[in-house]
Image 1 (cartoon, rainbow, N blue to C red):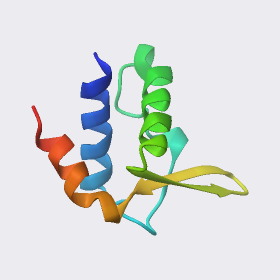
Image 2: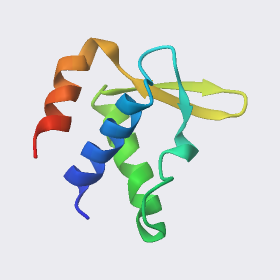
Image 3: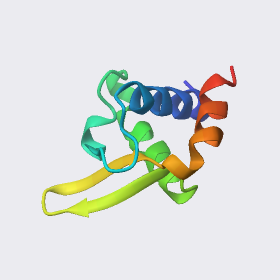
Length: 83
């Protein structure tokens, strides 16, 4: 599975769950639903999305939480639709 497909799948999953702005999920939950051999790669892609500012990161006492950046909604939806 290449990086672009993982990126698309992650963004689609977070959009489906309604994880925009203040609604966060643990970065440890992102690999769920992916094959076990891709779990490390999924976290790497998530960190790249944070660097691109498509995901917002929030450090909590129990770990890193992420959500979709509502200011980048159009760009995120374009990435999801690009097949």
